[in-house]
Amino acid sequence: MANVLLSTKAVGSTKLTVNGKAREFIVVHQGKPSSVYDESCNGTWLLMKDIYENRVWQSGNINKYESSDIHSYLNNTFLKLFDSNIQGAIKQVKLPYRKNGGSGGTTQQGANGLPCKIFLLSAPEVHYEHSYIDSGEGAALSYFASCVTNNADSKRVAYLNGSAAFWWLRSPRTDGTYVVWGVYSVGDCDRYYASSSYGIRPALVLPSTLLVSDDGTVSTNTPPTITSTNGASGVNLGSKTAAFSF
Image 1: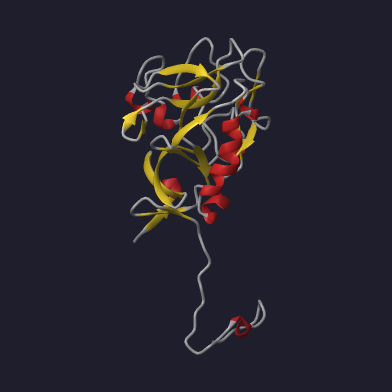
Image 2: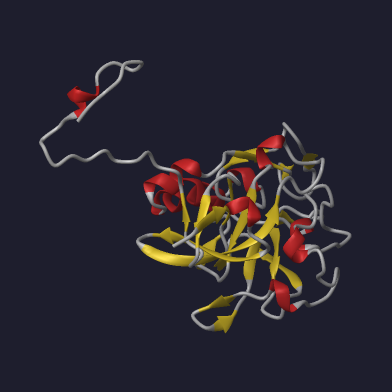
């Protein structure tokens, strides 16, 4: 089975194991999306192909992403569902976001972005614009760059248990403190109260130097295991700069 660098993968599907089950993720971008992103965001962007489950965005009905239930869940409980090698490889990024939520919030970009490993996409990242969307929350990712800006598009559609369903974005509606944007079942953007329970599509950034097998499975580089048939142990290897024998 041949392995290729993750950086060579065109936009499309690949696989990661989540909670012991192989899940399809879409390569949605290669590299740093734009200058509003911190250099930590330079890598291979992956988005879960389908909706993982329904979750409440914020139980107190406040649209501040940095203190939301969903942000905490993704970077604690959900992060730990990955295999340990992938979990350790996922990049800690700083994402553009609207600090303090909708009404009264401010755009944070670059080094001032929100530190996280697992996240929801923003409205600008799925190529959606609206007078009540903070346009500074990012730039259109390659996968969504061809989407219709302010209307339904099939590329935004995602499924839960075989049916198209609404999924959350990280973007608050900027004219209030309770409402959050998401993607409706037809691929258009809509908004609901933060205390509602709707679908999540976790996203993450991996180093582009990781390997991908023919079947799309991502793996990390691991050191070779030295074996011997004559009972040799690590002691036989000698010092770091000396010759060794089995």
